[in-house]
Image (cartoon, rainbow, N blue to C red; front, side, top):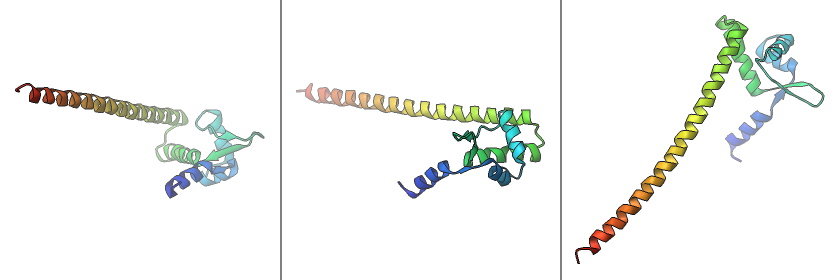
Length: 129
């Protein structure tokens, strides 16, 4: 695994308890519980039901805080913004998949047409004899 792959794997494996996550984004742990109740965040849970926050969760919490404090967006507005952001990401992934599919199809068609041209050129050369 290369260095960036190792960092990505480490990044995915890092988990924080609610108290550490709250401290990282400078909010009270009860705020995080509230965000979870209203569906803004969905931390993973251990078998013992302890909440664990990933770095992606922390980034999402930073966005929530920026929107509520910096932009004065209420929590319903934040929820709508985050849903739209996710929809845009999903659409981007689907678009990229479709572009790759089309490229594969076009490359196949180009190869097919080149083969036809090669065959036709061979027939034209053989015909004048």
